[in-house]
Length: 238
View 1 (cartoon, rainbow, N blue to C red):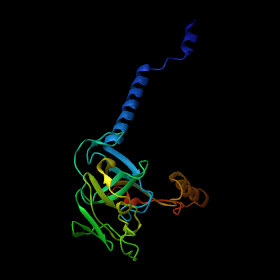
View 2: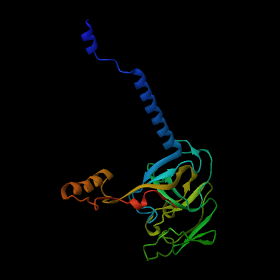
View 3: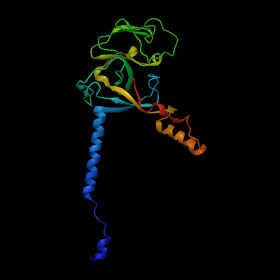
View 4: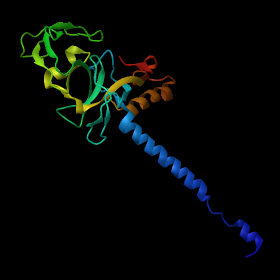
């Protein structure tokens, strides 16, 4: 083979470069899985039960080691690092359907006696006011037949919590389905990293494309379909 033909032959790929790139990608993947399993996890808000604290279309981060290091498969606590405090906003596995995650505010701690009288929340006989709570329905349902406005008294079991939504008249919470076990907690919500308003009946991508369609055809972004809530980005959750 002459020198001219030899120089035209393709050169083999640099195996060292491919190996380094593959190792870096593998390490990044492992780190992402570890972070999601033990440290932080992202969630989105699909309903208005936590308004005005959290809005439909909010995307938030949850600190998964706030209350302990957990088995990523069973969610059981391996090492306890703390316990929820009254007022914490927590994400948990819905006790009646483990395939769903809910987000509510901790109101009752283990051993607390919880009672609701005409929408007023009492813990161990003392009135507890939550600054973030809102009441949008002026009607009051008497008696315990409708547990929204009158509940208990009930004692919170050991290693369990009584939770409520901030949108008190429109929240499906512990008043209706009971307590949240410690092993069901995912972690504490602490930061809104993204938020959008628009047609939440559509998935994110379809809503975004709806906003983009207005820009393409009318030279103006369709904010009714999709709009970023810039003021909520980076907001700390209390």
